[in-house]
Image (tube, rainbow, N blue to C red; front, top):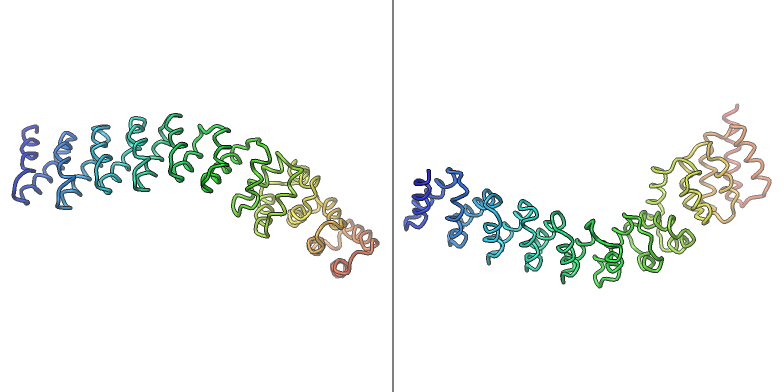
Length: 330
Protein backbone atom coordinates (compact mmCIF):
# COMPACT_ATOMS: atom_id res chain seq x y z
CA UNK A 1 0.00 0.00 0.00
CA UNK A 2 2.90 2.33 0.81
CA UNK A 3 4.24 1.92 -2.71
CA UNK A 4 0.88 2.69 -4.27
CA UNK A 5 0.54 5.72 -2.01
CA UNK A 6 3.94 7.06 -3.05
CA UNK A 7 3.21 6.52 -6.73
CA UNK A 8 -0.12 8.33 -6.51
CA UNK A 9 1.47 11.22 -4.63
CA UNK A 10 4.16 11.45 -7.29
CA UNK A 11 1.58 11.60 -10.10
CA UNK A 12 0.03 14.71 -8.53
CA UNK A 13 2.91 16.68 -10.11
CA UNK A 14 2.35 15.26 -13.59
CA UNK A 15 1.76 17.70 -16.45
CA UNK A 16 -1.26 15.82 -17.73
CA UNK A 17 -4.37 16.94 -15.85
CA UNK A 18 -6.12 13.60 -16.35
CA UNK A 19 -3.20 11.79 -14.73
CA UNK A 20 -3.31 14.21 -11.81
CA UNK A 21 -7.06 13.70 -11.34
CA UNK A 22 -6.65 9.91 -11.37
CA UNK A 23 -3.95 10.30 -8.73
CA UNK A 24 -6.34 12.30 -6.54
CA UNK A 25 -9.03 9.63 -6.87
CA UNK A 26 -6.52 6.93 -5.99
CA UNK A 27 -5.42 8.78 -2.87
CA UNK A 28 -9.02 9.22 -1.76
CA UNK A 29 -9.75 5.52 -2.31
CA UNK A 30 -6.70 4.49 -0.28
CA UNK A 31 -8.22 6.16 2.81
CA UNK A 32 -4.78 6.84 4.30
CA UNK A 33 -4.35 10.03 6.41
CA UNK A 34 -0.68 9.97 5.40
CA UNK A 35 -1.71 11.18 1.95
CA UNK A 36 -2.90 14.49 3.40
CA UNK A 37 0.57 16.01 3.04
CA UNK A 38 0.25 15.54 -0.72
CA UNK A 39 -2.95 17.57 -0.78
CA UNK A 40 -1.36 20.61 0.88
CA UNK A 41 0.07 21.93 -2.39
CA UNK A 42 -3.33 21.52 -4.06
CA UNK A 43 -4.78 24.17 -1.75
CA UNK A 44 -3.00 26.71 -3.98
CA UNK A 45 -3.88 25.09 -7.30
CA UNK A 46 -5.32 27.31 -10.02
CA UNK A 47 -7.90 24.63 -10.84
CA UNK A 48 -10.84 24.83 -8.43
CA UNK A 49 -11.47 21.09 -8.82
CA UNK A 50 -8.15 20.26 -7.17
CA UNK A 51 -8.71 22.84 -4.42
CA UNK A 52 -12.11 21.32 -3.73
CA UNK A 53 -10.66 17.80 -3.49
CA UNK A 54 -7.90 19.04 -1.21
CA UNK A 55 -10.44 20.61 1.14
CA UNK A 56 -12.43 17.37 1.14
CA UNK A 57 -9.27 15.51 2.14
CA UNK A 58 -8.57 17.94 4.97
CA UNK A 59 -12.13 17.64 6.24
CA UNK A 60 -11.74 13.87 6.28
CA UNK A 61 -8.26 13.47 7.74
CA UNK A 62 -7.04 16.72 9.34
CA UNK A 63 -8.68 16.09 12.75
CA UNK A 64 -6.91 12.71 12.83
CA UNK A 65 -3.55 14.05 11.67
CA UNK A 66 -3.76 16.86 14.22
CA UNK A 67 -2.97 20.49 14.87
CA UNK A 68 -0.40 21.05 12.11
CA UNK A 69 -2.82 19.86 9.44
CA UNK A 70 -5.55 22.27 10.56
CA UNK A 71 -3.00 25.09 10.71
CA UNK A 72 -2.33 24.49 7.01
CA UNK A 73 -5.86 25.77 6.52
CA UNK A 74 -6.21 28.46 9.18
CA UNK A 75 -3.02 30.23 8.12
CA UNK A 76 -3.96 30.21 4.43
CA UNK A 77 -4.60 33.39 2.43
CA UNK A 78 -7.78 32.00 0.85
CA UNK A 79 -10.99 32.77 2.73
CA UNK A 80 -12.64 29.48 1.74
CA UNK A 81 -9.63 27.53 2.97
CA UNK A 82 -9.59 29.40 6.31
CA UNK A 83 -13.32 28.81 6.74
CA UNK A 84 -12.72 25.11 6.20
CA UNK A 85 -10.07 25.21 8.93
CA UNK A 86 -12.37 27.12 11.26
CA UNK A 87 -15.02 24.44 10.83
CA UNK A 88 -12.52 21.82 12.02
CA UNK A 89 -11.58 23.60 15.27
CA UNK A 90 -14.32 21.95 17.29
CA UNK A 91 -13.11 18.48 16.23
CA UNK A 92 -9.69 19.26 17.73
CA UNK A 93 -11.18 19.91 21.16
CA UNK A 94 -8.83 21.53 23.67
CA UNK A 95 -5.92 21.03 21.30
CA UNK A 96 -7.42 23.56 18.91
CA UNK A 97 -7.76 26.46 21.35
CA UNK A 98 -4.35 27.92 20.52
CA UNK A 99 -5.38 28.25 16.87
CA UNK A 100 -8.82 29.52 17.81
CA UNK A 101 -7.32 32.39 19.84
CA UNK A 102 -5.38 33.54 16.77
CA UNK A 103 -8.43 33.22 14.53
CA UNK A 104 -10.44 35.54 16.77
CA UNK A 105 -8.71 38.36 14.89
CA UNK A 106 -9.41 37.03 11.41
CA UNK A 107 -10.88 39.58 8.98
CA UNK A 108 -13.82 37.27 8.24
CA UNK A 109 -16.80 37.24 10.62
CA UNK A 110 -17.62 33.58 9.92
CA UNK A 111 -14.09 32.51 10.83
CA UNK A 112 -14.19 34.64 13.98
CA UNK A 113 -17.52 33.15 15.03
CA UNK A 114 -16.30 29.57 14.51
CA UNK A 115 -13.17 30.34 16.54
CA UNK A 116 -15.27 31.85 19.32
CA UNK A 117 -17.61 28.84 19.35
CA UNK A 118 -14.62 26.52 19.72
CA UNK A 119 -13.28 28.54 22.64
CA UNK A 120 -16.68 28.68 24.34
CA UNK A 121 -16.84 24.89 24.17
CA UNK A 122 -13.23 23.90 24.82
CA UNK A 123 -11.37 26.97 26.06
CA UNK A 124 -10.08 27.57 29.58
CA UNK A 125 -10.58 30.77 31.56
CA UNK A 126 -7.59 32.42 29.87
CA UNK A 127 -9.10 31.77 26.47
CA UNK A 128 -12.40 33.29 27.53
CA UNK A 129 -10.57 36.28 28.98
CA UNK A 130 -9.00 36.78 25.56
CA UNK A 131 -12.50 36.96 24.14
CA UNK A 132 -13.52 39.55 26.73
CA UNK A 133 -10.57 41.72 25.67
CA UNK A 134 -11.15 41.31 21.94
CA UNK A 135 -11.74 44.46 19.90
CA UNK A 136 -14.67 42.90 18.05
CA UNK A 137 -18.13 43.50 19.55
CA UNK A 138 -19.51 40.14 18.46
CA UNK A 139 -16.65 38.25 20.15
CA UNK A 140 -17.11 40.13 23.44
CA UNK A 141 -20.85 39.45 23.24
CA UNK A 142 -20.24 35.71 22.90
CA UNK A 143 -17.81 35.79 25.83
CA UNK A 144 -20.65 36.96 28.08
CA UNK A 145 -22.40 33.63 27.49
CA UNK A 146 -19.63 31.49 28.95
CA UNK A 147 -20.22 29.78 32.28
CA UNK A 148 -16.86 31.02 33.61
CA UNK A 149 -17.88 34.69 33.43
CA UNK A 150 -17.60 36.28 36.84
CA UNK A 151 -20.18 38.67 38.24
CA UNK A 152 -17.62 41.45 37.86
CA UNK A 153 -17.10 40.66 34.18
CA UNK A 154 -20.84 40.73 33.57
CA UNK A 155 -21.20 44.05 35.38
CA UNK A 156 -18.38 45.44 33.23
CA UNK A 157 -20.26 44.10 30.21
CA UNK A 158 -23.25 46.23 31.17
CA UNK A 159 -21.03 49.28 30.69
CA UNK A 160 -19.46 48.12 27.42
CA UNK A 161 -19.51 50.58 24.51
CA UNK A 162 -21.41 48.01 22.42
CA UNK A 163 -25.15 47.60 22.96
CA UNK A 164 -24.97 43.94 21.92
CA UNK A 165 -22.39 43.23 24.65
CA UNK A 166 -24.56 45.03 27.19
CA UNK A 167 -27.60 42.94 26.27
CA UNK A 168 -25.68 39.65 26.54
CA UNK A 169 -24.28 40.69 29.92
CA UNK A 170 -27.76 41.61 31.14
CA UNK A 171 -29.21 38.33 29.88
CA UNK A 172 -26.52 36.37 31.71
CA UNK A 173 -27.08 38.25 34.97
CA UNK A 174 -30.83 37.67 34.81
CA UNK A 175 -30.45 33.98 33.88
CA UNK A 176 -28.13 33.47 36.84
CA UNK A 177 -30.46 35.47 39.09
CA UNK A 178 -27.52 37.53 40.31
CA UNK A 179 -28.29 40.14 42.97
CA UNK A 180 -26.85 43.47 41.81
CA UNK A 181 -27.47 47.12 42.53
CA UNK A 182 -30.56 48.60 40.89
CA UNK A 183 -28.46 51.35 39.30
CA UNK A 184 -26.68 48.73 37.17
CA UNK A 185 -29.95 47.44 35.72
CA UNK A 186 -32.05 50.60 35.54
CA UNK A 187 -30.63 51.82 32.18
CA UNK A 188 -32.21 48.75 30.55
CA UNK A 189 -35.80 49.37 31.66
CA UNK A 190 -36.76 50.51 28.17
CA UNK A 191 -35.68 47.31 26.40
CA UNK A 192 -38.11 45.79 23.94
CA UNK A 193 -37.06 42.18 24.61
CA UNK A 194 -36.35 40.06 27.67
CA UNK A 195 -38.92 42.01 29.66
CA UNK A 196 -40.43 38.99 31.44
CA UNK A 197 -37.09 37.92 32.93
CA UNK A 198 -36.28 41.50 33.89
CA UNK A 199 -39.69 41.90 35.55
CA UNK A 200 -39.33 38.65 37.51
CA UNK A 201 -35.80 39.62 38.56
CA UNK A 202 -37.03 43.02 39.76
CA UNK A 203 -39.92 41.42 41.68
CA UNK A 204 -37.42 39.29 43.59
CA UNK A 205 -34.52 41.67 44.14
CA UNK A 206 -36.00 45.19 43.98
CA UNK A 207 -39.78 44.86 44.43
CA UNK A 208 -40.20 48.42 45.68
CA UNK A 209 -38.98 49.69 42.32
CA UNK A 210 -41.29 47.60 40.15
CA UNK A 211 -43.44 50.62 39.38
CA UNK A 212 -40.45 52.37 37.78
CA UNK A 213 -40.08 49.42 35.41
CA UNK A 214 -43.85 49.18 34.81
CA UNK A 215 -43.88 52.79 33.58
CA UNK A 216 -41.60 51.73 30.72
CA UNK A 217 -43.71 48.75 29.66
CA UNK A 218 -46.07 48.66 26.70
CA UNK A 219 -49.20 46.53 26.08
CA UNK A 220 -47.21 43.64 24.60
CA UNK A 221 -44.91 43.56 27.63
CA UNK A 222 -47.88 43.30 29.99
CA UNK A 223 -49.33 40.58 27.79
CA UNK A 224 -46.08 38.58 27.93
CA UNK A 225 -45.76 38.95 31.70
CA UNK A 226 -49.37 37.90 32.25
CA UNK A 227 -48.93 34.92 29.94
CA UNK A 228 -45.92 33.81 31.97
CA UNK A 229 -47.83 34.15 35.24
CA UNK A 230 -50.80 32.18 33.96
CA UNK A 231 -48.54 29.37 32.85
CA UNK A 232 -46.36 29.25 35.95
CA UNK A 233 -48.29 30.55 38.96
CA UNK A 234 -51.24 28.50 40.21
CA UNK A 235 -52.67 30.55 43.07
CA UNK A 236 -52.39 33.84 44.91
CA UNK A 237 -50.43 32.33 47.79
CA UNK A 238 -47.40 32.25 45.49
CA UNK A 239 -44.68 34.63 46.67
CA UNK A 240 -44.60 36.36 43.27
CA UNK A 241 -48.33 37.15 43.34
CA UNK A 242 -48.02 38.37 46.91
CA UNK A 243 -45.17 40.65 45.86
CA UNK A 244 -47.26 42.04 43.00
CA UNK A 245 -50.17 42.67 45.38
CA UNK A 246 -47.91 44.41 47.90
CA UNK A 247 -46.37 46.60 45.21
CA UNK A 248 -49.75 47.54 43.70
CA UNK A 249 -49.21 45.89 40.32
CA UNK A 250 -52.99 45.95 39.93
CA UNK A 251 -53.19 45.65 36.15
CA UNK A 252 -51.05 42.52 36.05
CA UNK A 253 -52.92 40.91 38.96
CA UNK A 254 -56.27 41.66 37.30
CA UNK A 255 -55.15 40.10 34.03
CA UNK A 256 -53.80 37.03 35.82
CA UNK A 257 -57.15 36.60 37.58
CA UNK A 258 -58.97 36.36 34.24
CA UNK A 259 -57.99 32.72 33.96
CA UNK A 260 -58.68 31.76 37.57
CA UNK A 261 -61.74 30.12 39.11
CA UNK A 262 -63.72 30.44 42.33
CA UNK A 263 -60.69 29.75 44.53
CA UNK A 264 -59.44 33.27 43.76
CA UNK A 265 -62.78 35.07 44.26
CA UNK A 266 -61.63 36.91 47.38
CA UNK A 267 -58.78 38.53 45.49
CA UNK A 268 -61.00 39.01 42.42
CA UNK A 269 -63.60 41.03 44.34
CA UNK A 270 -60.83 43.02 46.04
CA UNK A 271 -59.61 44.00 42.58
CA UNK A 272 -63.13 44.79 41.36
CA UNK A 273 -63.69 47.07 44.34
CA UNK A 274 -60.26 48.72 44.18
CA UNK A 275 -60.52 52.18 42.64
CA UNK A 276 -56.80 52.18 41.88
CA UNK A 277 -57.32 49.35 39.39
CA UNK A 278 -58.06 50.42 35.81
CA UNK A 279 -61.83 50.55 35.34
CA UNK A 280 -61.65 48.52 32.11
CA UNK A 281 -59.83 45.73 33.94
CA UNK A 282 -62.44 45.82 36.72
CA UNK A 283 -65.21 45.60 34.15
CA UNK A 284 -63.56 42.61 32.48
CA UNK A 285 -63.29 40.84 35.83
CA UNK A 286 -67.04 41.25 36.28
CA UNK A 287 -67.74 40.03 32.75
CA UNK A 288 -65.71 36.87 33.41
CA UNK A 289 -68.23 35.95 36.12
CA UNK A 290 -71.17 35.70 33.69
CA UNK A 291 -70.96 31.91 33.54
CA UNK A 292 -71.10 31.71 37.33
CA UNK A 293 -73.67 34.47 37.80
CA UNK A 294 -76.16 32.23 39.65
CA UNK A 295 -73.69 31.05 42.28
CA UNK A 296 -74.69 32.26 45.79
CA UNK A 297 -71.28 33.76 46.58
CA UNK A 298 -71.23 35.67 43.31
CA UNK A 299 -74.75 37.01 43.89
CA UNK A 300 -73.87 38.03 47.45
CA UNK A 301 -70.65 39.81 46.45
CA UNK A 302 -72.42 41.51 43.54
CA UNK A 303 -75.04 42.99 45.91
CA UNK A 304 -72.32 44.28 48.24
CA UNK A 305 -70.44 45.85 45.35
CA UNK A 306 -73.56 47.49 43.89
CA UNK A 307 -74.17 49.07 47.28
CA UNK A 308 -70.93 51.03 46.92
CA UNK A 309 -72.43 52.99 43.99
CA UNK A 310 -69.72 52.11 41.44
CA UNK A 311 -69.03 54.12 38.25
CA UNK A 312 -71.49 53.83 35.37
CA UNK A 313 -69.38 51.39 33.34
CA UNK A 314 -69.21 49.00 36.27
CA UNK A 315 -72.92 49.40 36.96
CA UNK A 316 -73.63 48.22 33.42
CA UNK A 317 -71.35 45.20 33.96
CA UNK A 318 -73.15 44.47 37.25
CA UNK A 319 -76.57 44.70 35.59
CA UNK A 320 -75.43 42.29 32.90
CA UNK A 321 -74.25 39.94 35.60
CA UNK A 322 -77.53 40.21 37.46
CA UNK A 323 -79.49 39.54 34.26
CA UNK A 324 -77.35 36.49 33.58
CA UNK A 325 -78.06 35.22 37.11
CA UNK A 326 -81.81 35.46 36.52
CA UNK A 327 -81.52 33.65 33.19
CA UNK A 328 -79.44 30.86 34.69
CA UNK A 329 -81.88 30.29 37.57
CA UNK A 330 -85.07 30.49 35.50
